[in-house]
Structure formats: structure tokens, C-alpha cells
Length: 256
Image (cartoon, rainbow, N blue to C red; front, side, top):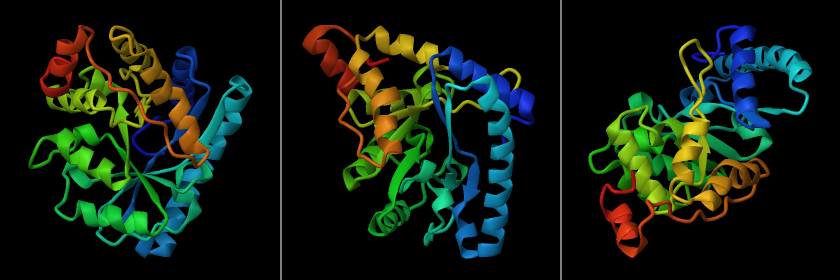
């Protein structure tokens, strides 16, 4: 559909990888610039192209993976300050939840106003990979302020395990330590050489005794979000070690 699988073979390999890791519900989120909402003809052309490709893939994959439920949405780039996401196809699998990101992994000065505009239009923003955005201050603090507004946060599994570098990992760990993450994403792009970080991330949680948090972030809350319900609070995820270990995890870098 864009920067993911290039053909049905790669797409099927990606689904197989997720199924082997225990996944039974997959929502595909190809990219879309929200500026297209100001050009109905181009927007419809993009949606139609994605829906056609998705339908072809589902027709093949449902025969091979009959126990998997497939859904469609978009990862919407907030590239203009006045988005008008009215088309139901833009949202995650029939909900009013809009998966959003910022251009070039840079947070613009007007980011808060854009999120407020969406919330005021009865749109629930779910910010994709907030730990990866470059900000003027600490990344996790910017994401925490979005969370205080009522925005939900989705962290990439690869960030927790260091795929996107130490800064993204540090931000992800701190957000988890403060209980500010609502769900996790595989961010799987099934191309040769790419691998799923699900088991590696699960091991990271298991090493911290964070079984409940893992269940909430990968099963309970995603199911609630796709049902149009608010995610449940997730307990802080910190390194084992009693009170001092918890304090270090919250305020230092020891959560890693």
C-alpha cells in the first residue's frame, strides 16, 4: 500500500510472523496526509486505491489465516493546522479513533492546537510513536502533555528494544514508567530484513514482572480502542528492585 509489503508474498509473510507471535487481530495503517481532506477528489482516489489493495490482500490471507480478523485505518500525517477528517475510512476500523503523526518526526509549534481541534470535533487522536518525535524539550514530557489533554498514546515495540536509537528508547521507557502509554504497535513493515519485535518486547516486560501491563497494552486496550471504548489505565513498568528501583525507573534512566 505504501512503505510496507511490496506484494502479496511479502504481505503474507508479515501476517505469518504476527500469527506465529500469537496475534489474531491486525489493523493495517498505511499513510495519508491530512491535507488531502481539503481536496475531496484526491482524498477519495487515495482511499479507493488503499481499499482495493487491502481487499485483494484480505481475500488471499483470510484463506490462509481463517482465525485472524483484519481491519483497516490510516496513519494520518498532520501536515496542516486545520484538518478536516470527516471521511469514516480515515479512522481505525470503523471507530472515531484517528491514528496521527507529525511530518518529518518533528513536532510543530501548533501541535496542541491541532489536537484540540480534533478533540473538539469528536475525534479521538491516538498519537503514533510519540517517543520518536524530536521536540525542544524531553520527548516524553511533550507526549505527557498531550496525554493530559485527553489524547491517547501508542508506542512502537521497537522503540522499547532500541530499534530507533537511545533517545526513542529512553522516551518510551519513561512513558511506560509513568503509566502514560495506552497501547503498543508492532510497526511491522514486512520487507526482507525487517523483523517483528513482539517476542523481544514481551521478554522485556516479563523481565520486569509487568505481565498485567503487557496484557493491557497488547490485548485489552487495543480491543477497547477498536470497540470505541477508552483504554484502561496501565500500571507503571519499571525495573524490579523495590522502592528505590521504582524511583530510579521513574526519575532516572534505570527503567531500561
